Image (tube, rainbow, N blue to C red; front, side, top):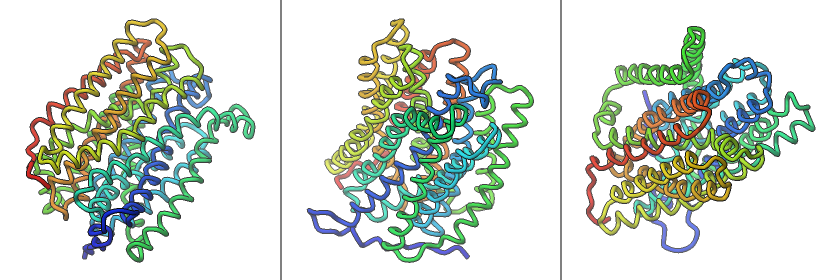
Length: 483
């Protein structure tokens, strides 16, 4: 019989004003979790760019290397996508604290193992497994913050914690060239790419252990055995399914973007089976109009996030004909803007709700501004044969500032439109649907580059999708009474 995890919620929620509170420590630990999990997944993009530039044996046989490189990123997100909804369900059953600790330890082991693999297929399998483990983090992070933070500060808490995403992106992007250079000194040029995975894997394992200790301290023993066994069993099946689709489709000569779309179809077939077996609460979440609108609008958000996160170094290097190191430095302006954007967006969202305006108007406005700025960036790339690194840095930073600010607004709005007992499942469904963008974006964008020899068309598509998501936000029904 499933155990209902009514974890302690009083601590921190009624804390006196002023000074450091227990929920601040929770935010800081979850910020660290986002940092390491995003560094682990982001490092694949710069490493793939390096492998392509150096005509490495792993990708040398590919006639369309950017498409293949993008597909590697897409397959990671196929795994990540598939455990979004099961992760939320397991969190509701075994406890969100437990699933957060398991996710980070899993990510550390899988990232470390990625750096030890030889051969493309083995590497892809480890990336899929990394995604499957990291996929349970999001819904449980959002749920635990909502559970242990005063309601008036929920948006701020979600914004502060997810700032780790931006820090992780920045660290992975800016450190990749230096870690690869170190790898060349230690392992030689052929195996230099391994070093980023080895370093980040060890660091994530260490932080995962610290997280497990902290989670035990704030809520008692973790139900790690049962939850880990359930996640292992689920992941084994899902990994086999993802790889089967990849190998069959690739053997049939299907383009990389087509494989990515098939992986999305696979995700919804499997999740449909879960709905069929477990109606009740899961079915109620799937019929919530606001949850569905937010979820489908978030496809564009995840598309934008992983188009720029995976390919930003390549975009800058190709447009400005710059070195790998210089391109990585410019790309950090896109990644680093979240350090300001995430907490600012969460705070603005809480303020708007407290004043009775609601979170939705701000969410729409920030999404429109960000979409327009991406279109301006595309136009700049199209009209300048050798774009300025400084201009690209400014455009990437400002557009990313709005982009990162809008995300905690959407998260907090989702929290407002579901019952507390359904949070884990709702956030799992939300990110499951949104991850369609992350699965398709790297592969399709890489294919477009191979076809046109430029990133401009892919950037235009990204901006148009963000504007389309703003239209979906206008259809959401939000209560705007003062908090």
